[in-house]
Amino acid sequence: MARIITVGAAQLGPLQLKDTKANAIARMIRLLERARVRGVELVVFPELALTTFFPRHFHENLEDADHWFEQTMPSPDTEPLFAAARKYGIGFHLGYAEIAHEADETGVVRKRRFNTSILVNGTGDIVLKYRKVHLPGHAEYDHRRCIQHLEKRYFEVGNLGFPVIRAPMGGLSGLNMGMMICNDRRWPEAWRVLGLQGVEMVTLGYNTPSTNQSAATQTGGGFEAPHLRVAHSHLSIQAGCYQNATFAVATAKAGVEDGCELFGHSIIVNPQGEIMAQATSWDDELITADCNLEQVQLGRSTIFNFAEHRRPEAYARITDQTGAVEPPVWVRPSNPSESDASSSLTRVDDRKAAS
Ligand code: CDV
Image 1 (spheres, rainbow, N blue to C red):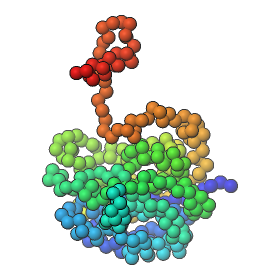
Image 2: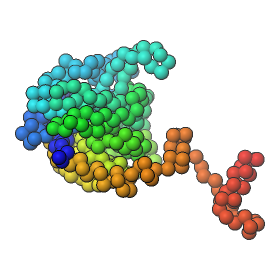
Image 3: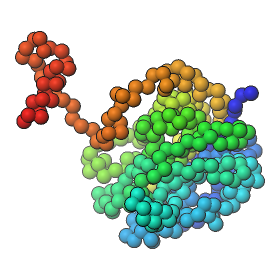
């Protein structure tokens, strides 16, 4: 029997500073109701979906930022969303700011903050949790920037890796699901770690400004045209899906939020890298697609048959190294008998080591 699941990206329009979490949840429940009418079995909400993208606001004292975070899940604010999902039998992906009291790598239990997402199935059970690994931005107030991006201040790097779980979802007895959060989608390593666990459906939420706000661009370090911002987001997701033979649902916050324009353009992508559905508004909007899981088989059994074709012995730099290193410099060999590339490069390396 065909394995088909109907999924939805529930894009949210802007959430302003004055909006409460209850406002946000009410809007999400309205989107869930629309999802039910359209036969959707899994709905994906954006990154940090309960509040404005608060890392653009500086708090000297971290405790003053606690109201942006959830200490339990379901939390008192999110319980109505869980209840609606249970009532309609719809699964959902939710991004939120998490406070956890747990041991760090030194074994000390302390208050920790993460940029987190969960997958919940139609019976209201949390089947998977993920904490954002690739945190962009900075930890201190940056006077060169018009708009701050303080994710490195408010969140620790996620400590759960990139997990995949096989769990019932919608009418499927088992679906291999994994998550990413926003900036993660730009990193092929993240997609491949999910791909190596047989992921069939990647769910991800994002908050991406229409213009590059980095200090580098604000101080003349480069220019990224606004239309390329969307292109780069889609390129990353489409490539990730194609190269790992998976579907993805990528859901944005959109519109002018708290003085900052977010580009929206939520998409659902198939394992060939094609966009199956795309949001066109800058507001709350539900886009849907029927995903036939048989489509993951083509990539997995041909070009991206990992067991057959991967060459991990050539990939050591991926995990051994963080920043790029300079390559050796080619020099014309003085002796023609040494004219093959590898011997001249070896000689350059030797010379460097000796100097
Ligand atoms: N929330 C994000 O992770 N945003 C980044 C921005 C800062 C570039 C993104 O990759 O979309």
